[in-house]
Structure formats: structure tokens, C-alpha cells
Image (cartoon, rainbow, N blue to C red; front, top):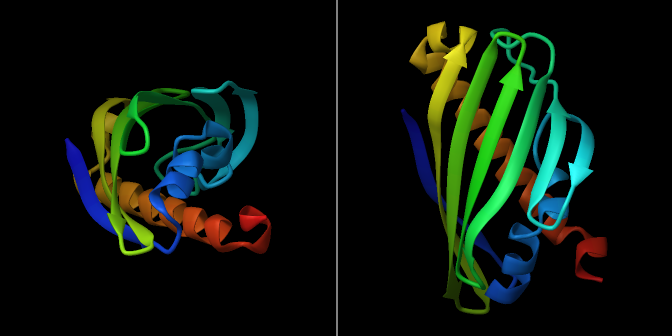
Length: 152
């Protein structure tokens, strides 16, 4: 449906980046618009999101699952969202590549399915909203990795 891809460079080595990006507890801190986290396990988290988009009212119940991991190289994530009269399924993959002393993360994110009222939202709005979530998430990951407490 809607697909994004890109690369993000980090100064930390692949093992350190892998430890964070495959950790659901770390990731839920980086997802924008999280109102509360209702359950966290080693490979799965459930949360309530309150998106700031005009075409999504109220809250969404979201589940993030980490699947198909090959440490410290690749991981695949499944994200499901359900709200009143709407649903969305997305998938993301990452591949870590050493780059000097740091790491290049090659990523893809794809909205796989939209249900309910979200089916009627123009694809340009969905694309813009999804791109904003992806960008905000990567910015939060970078900020947390570079924070002094993340390295201690």
C-alpha cells in the first residue's frame, strides 16, 4: 500500500544499536503519541496511542511485535492498530551494516492494510501521516541513543 525506506547512520557500533532496536521496552519510548503502555514483554508491547491527525479521532490500541530477528543484523516488526471504526496494519524491517566505528541502519516501513474509516482517507494524507510517524520515531531513537544516560 504505502511504503517508505531509507537509511539512518549512528555513531554507536552495531551490537549496541541492535541491543536497543530489538528491545521493545526501548522502542515504545520512541514511538510518538503514546498515551500509555498497557503491556510489555520481551518481544511485544501493547499501548494506547492518541494520534495528532485530524482524520483519526480518539485513541488507538496498538500492538508492536518483534519477529524474525537475526542478531545483530536484521529484525522485522509488526504493528497493528485498532480504534473506533478504524484499523491499520504495518510492517517494518531493519538491517544493520557496520560503517567505520558506527552503524548504518537500512529500514523499510509499509502500511499493509487499512480498515474501516481509514480506507476512505486519501492516500496522500495516509502517506504524510505515516512519514511523520517514521521521522519522529527515528528522531526519538537518535535522541535517546545520544542521551548521556543511554550510554552509561
